[in-house]
Length: 113
Length: 115
Image 1: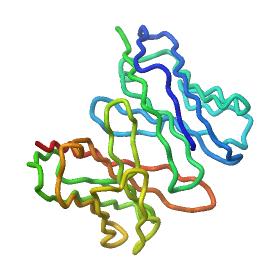
Image 2: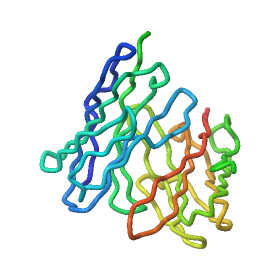
Image 3: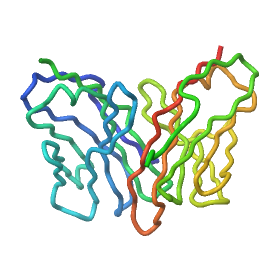
Image 4: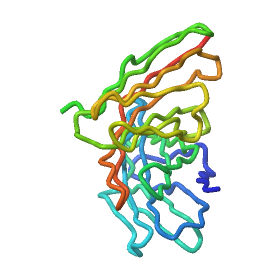
């Protein structure tokens, strides 16, 4: 069975510092996609970043970047220059097709002023 | 362009009551999804619709039914609500191109409490 694990239920970081959220997954598929979604207190789910498994280059989106280690089945999210607005629940997700997206349990991130 | 909308935002039911959660998208997406979110468990797929006229079960379909009314609308029905269905429900949509995975766009969620 395909699973997504986020081993850090809660994390905190000082404003302007860097934080890394961990995610591991298990699959026998070779072609797949990995995602990080952000859910702020407003509850709205927002896609932060996406990585295609066939791409070796790590995805980046402004202050957000990933460290994708395919052999280790690891997909961590690094947030640089943390801002108060980054306070949210972060979900790692894995998908092999449009109907099979599996979400991890989430990591609650608090940015401290 | 409202994206994905859901109604209602909050609902309290008594055990055994029925209700329908409504979802609509204005992005001309082919695929639509219903998830439930429970603490410590992420989002779990209840049902999805790959295209108008089709629906399929997800990971946790028991106790639910869905209807893809047209391309825009995808409703979720609880025929006889149970306390175990207390959750936050999210509707999502995506372009649905099977050649590659599309980003899913989410609605604001419905918080449902079953007493």
